[in-house]
Length: 347
Image (cartoon, rainbow, N blue to C red):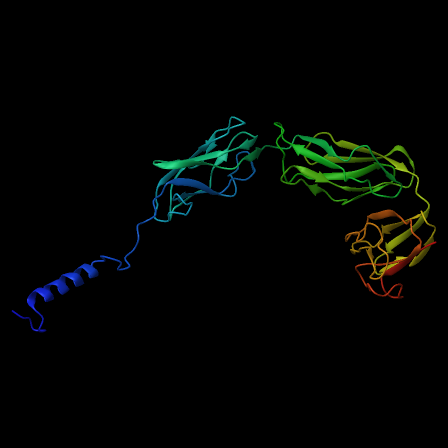
């Protein structure tokens, strides 16, 4: 028996079965692969340092992942947050169980009620490997300000101490407190501190000020006081001032609107020094060695505003040294009137 297309009936039947099998995705017909298998959890937005009682920021997120660490976006698994390491004996508040949406659970209102350093959170879900967050701090109100660096230093009169005085602000449990205004104020010696406005503590509870000593030489003649807003007591830094080395002083900027070095040219002997003192108000300047000049030690000085002192820089080799500033400057023009350049002759 033959069919309408002229083939034997058995051959037509085999072709029909083959087509049906192919149409059902058999063989390598290109159908969708298997869905990824959820195996574990991972913190994908870690908790940060937060005030006691406030919602932990940023909002914590936990993601369902497969064995390769790829997100399983089809998962809607319920995920529960708990305290892992609990240095302060805190209680966890907020909604602690959330269903994953496209594989991610977000916890936006978690709180802890006791300060402490190095808390961790844990995340769990049935059938999945749990996860532990990175460590974070819970801080209370600032109650203590303490010296952290920069006490008992020595510097030449009229120059900055080598290390900026720094304080640490903590709560009652010794946890660093960020964003606390700290004011530095010169209390003896006639020096200056920059900035004169309060400095907010960093995430690590630290704040520092740039201290330039006064003009009188002596042991422990300069003092600087640091106080933190809302904290009883203060910290006093002490420094000794040595006599100025022989040499020259160059003013940087010489006042608002007069953007030059004064004097523009100095002559010193081998072994003497040059000190640059910023006097340009809020205008930033640098001291930078000009092209073609022997290098001036320590340059470029970095960009600074008043008050700031660079040096004293000692010159031990005879020669002609040229330098320029960041305003109205010409790196290739040695000492050109109208430009912020200068020259040192060492003989």
